[in-house]
Length: 104
Image (cartoon, rainbow, N blue to C red):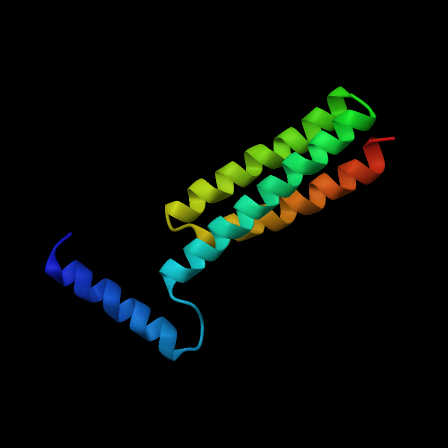
């Protein structure tokens, strides 16, 4: 990374702070933390669901949510935070809907 790239990165972060929003780096970290927390919660729910009833659907629904959280973490590391945010919200809504509709 050259010094001009570093200066542009700092200028972009300073501009984001003046606007009142988080810097791009802070936004990436927030998405990574949110996805990691959701991943831990999905793993806990998966363990509880499997203890009460073992089903391929349970593993499928919560396994896909775990995979999606990993994808969101990777996207956030690459700077695709908006796409990661949308995937996280849509994936969580889809998992909750599938849990309600498909799982007995």
